[in-house]
Image (cartoon, rainbow, N blue to C red):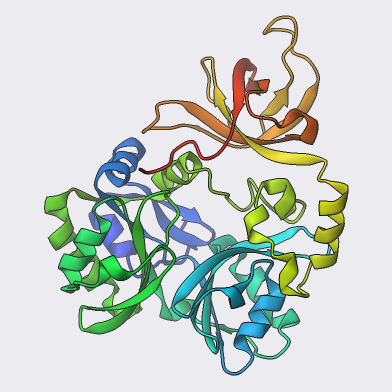
Length: 370
């Protein structure tokens, strides 16, 4: 842990009593007062996450949009300025290098936020495949915060003295004045709730954190760690790279069809994705809800039901993510299974560490805000 890199907020986490862990080479808070409490705060009021470990890669200048659009499967050219878009980055064989969000300020000024564990890999990939504009790693200049929850907009408006946040749509970008600096914000997140990601400079990081809590604490704002971030994203059925998607999985298999725009023209992986779409993927990522006691976890095997719980049928796949959700109070998960076994309401059995847990496949997110 001593070798882990600190974020601009690490000192604050320590003062707040956070349990710190080494995650992707960074010293990060796993939890403060408990994952369940932090999860519920985000669902009911608001939570503040340190996500300064994420990578930020800048593309600027003529040809920046064209450069990025060739390296991702979604169509960045189709969105207006001051908007963001979620997209995979694909290998030529269709597997996923990473998933990311591209923030398009203009056609000549875009920033890509990538997963912390893939930061170096992604920068090398972009550097190798960039056709016109070369990427610049600006991660050290950004101390990203994620303010998430139904009261996030109210808290940010109070802290920044901003009255225009209601005009920023989902995946829209805007600007606020926070702690004396003009600061970019985006209505994006990883929790299934409304909220904003705040692109702070490290120099303003601690002051911004304190100011958000000054105005947010009376409204129920709580600090939230990686543990709650994971349970929240799984309730919303959002993908986690390394678990639900990786170099061996394709967007079609992972249920990311909305992120593949074959009609936009050439991009890395297009030929393989066209071929797999025509041939139909042989496996699919599915969501399931346990109907018996037990908590399915990553790597647990998935079976078809047999004659008895102790004697299941054939093994058909494996769990990629699983947890007991604080808000829904259910054991849920995602798993890869053959396409012929992927229909909603299909019964499965999970070997949860030697305990057979019956479950049912379900469609759509486990949680969706009203």
